[in-house]
Length: 295
Image 1 (cartoon, rainbow, N blue to C red):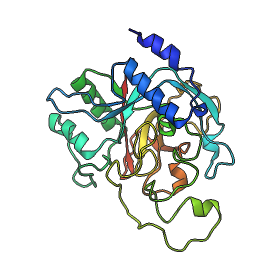
Image 2: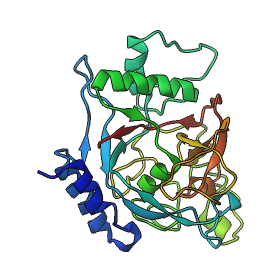
Image 3: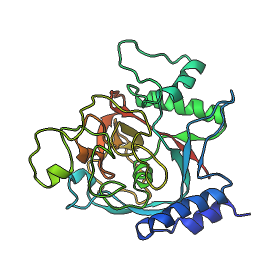
Image 4: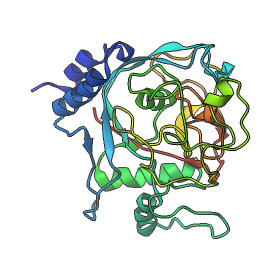
């Protein structure tokens, strides 16, 4: 029987961009097996209901940020650098939905502000602040006996990329078939400096239900577009002097969000793209997904 430390030592040396997609998936499966888990699993709440579905993410190394010639690159994504995820973890396959959040609402005194727009069913939970996300995570930890938290910026990007180095996990071109972005601001046409007069997909001024677009090689949905996602990392203007394990020593009232949204141009949905948000900010295009610690 291997210990958690032996699992970490064996797998944390993998440099994911050197692996083929089949090897990326195999690494996930092997990590899950060593931890006596399925690659995709859900914890059980005290009331017998299932917690949000999670995907096991192996330890390893990758290149965080973007190179200057990636279309959409900004200085905030500079410099591209090696980042080392030392321990495996599990992350939500989907952003937290209104249905997920409803279980927390029913079990606590948290209430919806009637003047705000709210999600329903399988739509991403929106119009909540980070403090609300933390309350949900504390509740989820208490319900399951496991530690739930927000991902760091590095964990989020590592999970979204799943070993890829392209602008999106599926390549360097994107359409509304793969990503829910603002259809008036496409990616391929802008990159090729083509004029466009009508969007190739119908504009939609709201988030779609989770799982609508294709998953990446680790089974994560909606890492590009739909809604921005909170991370637990304080904002810095670039990756200069970033810690190579993805941690941060900064204290800031601004936090990093990742993923882009239905309200934003496609360039903001790239794996490397990042946006600062106030700690107390809420919006109709801002949600979160959870991390569950494994070791």
